[in-house]
Picture: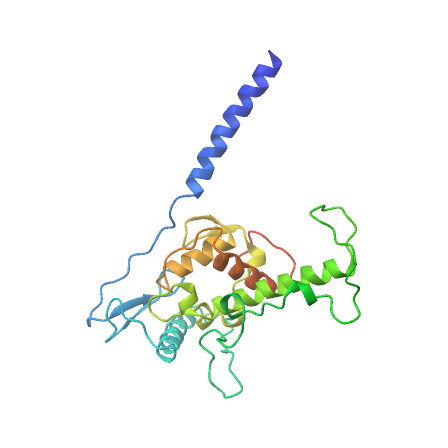
Length: 252
């Protein structure tokens, strides 16, 4: 009898949990854009409020990097005028030549332009080729070679995320806007504050939820599947930029 009652209670709990999970699996809400007045395309910031119309840009057309960056700066200037008490980092990272680097380093090898490195020589000069390596046991003793492989793989994954973050093409955008145009070097993303209630989404959001919302809205692309390597790499890059910052979930 007791076991039956416990199982019955668990069933109710699981049913309620499934309902909650289904609710969180719903499509992210989108904001209604004001109509274009001059026949262009209306672009919106990720606050879901600040907008501007790009005259001469037709649906389906993409801006050049310089045009998209100019539009992004215009939108951010509007946002800053409405929020003069908020500090927002806007310095755009530049190349040695003095101009923003818009796309992926196409000379690099490996996925998304990242370096492949190769685990075979990762241990470096002088490392023993016969070192034992743990295979899937979380509590096994790790060797120096293991840690070097772990770090190299992680650094490569973060580097891939950085390239996606800086590329409208890899993000799947349709208007030339990339994440770094409003968040240079992932500034002001505050991944340590997630999960938290996000007004734009009207629900408690994870960092990847907000990434997808921004891809769908300001970037005007399609949301990425949770297992899409681009989404995972983006999340890794943003988190890596806040190394050492204490976690503070729910903070606004």
